[in-house]
Image 1 (tube, one colour):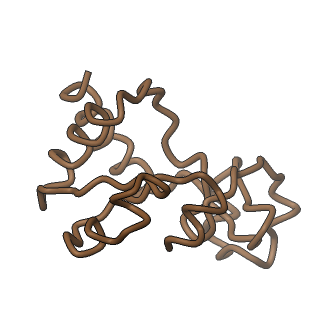
Image 2 (cartoon, one colour):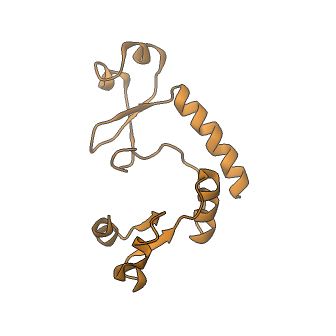
Length: 124
């Protein structure tokens, strides 16, 4: 994780207080933030405020597996990859160009978007 943060200029978000004591972190070579809350809503609020993020809301635009930006793809490209019911009931899909994972706006997506919109209102 530290090597990835160094190599990709990332900020580590962690609940591990011991990681915050590592020399690379204390010397500022690796940026890290200690997450203090267990509640995801409070975590989001703290991260946005502490890092002074310009909170641009684009849910589910990155792959959950490898963090690559998702790209739109057609139904014909996901045939045989997604369940037949999903292919029949959905018309828009995105796919990760790296790991090839496919995403669509099903019921889980709808519930998470609703939750994220509620959290966004509390952060702003």
